[in-house]
Each structure stands twice: as C-alpha cells, then as structure tokens.
View: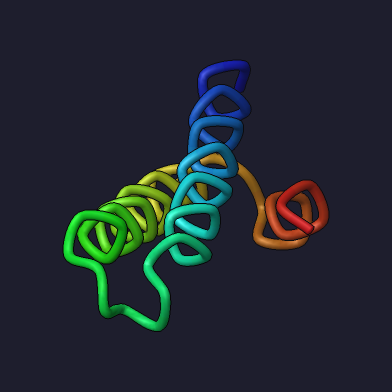
Amino acid sequence: MGYAYGLLAAAIAAEVAGTTAMKYSDGFTRLWPSIGTAVGYLIAFTLLAQTLKTLSVGTAYAIWA
C-alpha cells in the first residue's frame, strides 16, 4: 500500500512539473517547455493508472485534488 502512495506522490509531482512547463511554453510556441508539458502529463497519467490498480479511485482522486 505504501508503494501506491509513493506512485501517487510521483504522479502529482509530474503533473505539477507539466503544468509549470505549460506556463513557460507561451501557448505551445516554445519547443522545450512544450515537450516538458507533454512528458510531464504522460508520466503523471501513467503513474496514476498504476496507482489505481491498488488504491480505490475515490482515495486517489481525493489525494490528487
């Protein structure tokens, strides 16, 4: 169970990183921040999917929000 919470924490961190990169992408006109946004969200949702194999959806979304 602790592993799932670690994955969820990593997913949240990746989502925050992706959102921060989105701010610097200037409407996706700058290449590297745009790539950072895509990679951040890809990692975030991949880790969230892995988390949901162990934690209930309600618990995971409550912590995510």
